[in-house]
Image (tube, rainbow, N blue to C red; front, side):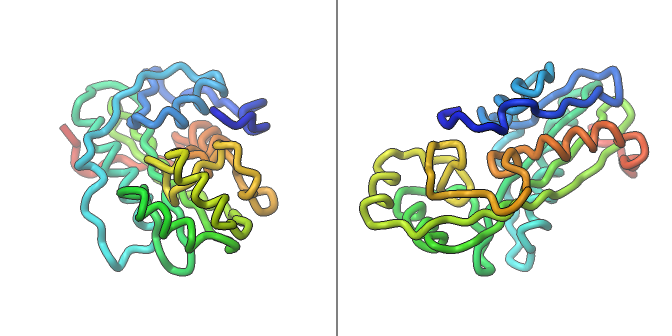
Length: 218
């Protein structure tokens, strides 16, 4: 990561609940870096782009990230008879607006202008799915962030950097920006894309939390 964050040190790691290989259903380099920093061994099998489609205007941000994480897991489960699938989706929300990845520079600028000087939330949906046992659990973690008011120069410099590309809310907490801070004790890794503290808890409690998938996915 481009920002030397304390969150990369001492990340929790739990034993896997099955003997299946851990499969990250994401092409996000940030999620992979977090897992590596925590000491997990895993494979990477990104879900197809279409797994992120189907936006419902009535959904809240927590509902949306939970659904998208589940859809990504479904896509990868269909390709594996064995494997503990880990899928995630991250969105920002501010003043009732859900902010995903920007389509272009203009879209990124509108997002950053909305966030400038305001508190907002970042939500990550996490889906763990054992392909071998067809048991699954979905959870959502929220982190509260505060963004300082951005001057026109700060805004244009960041847009010129293109670091906003591919990031929910058009910014990266790990990009070295001192104008973003996590409020209270909320999870920093959640803002980057994977709540490592909660992931360890889900792995430890998977047997008691996960439900049998009603219809086997193949």
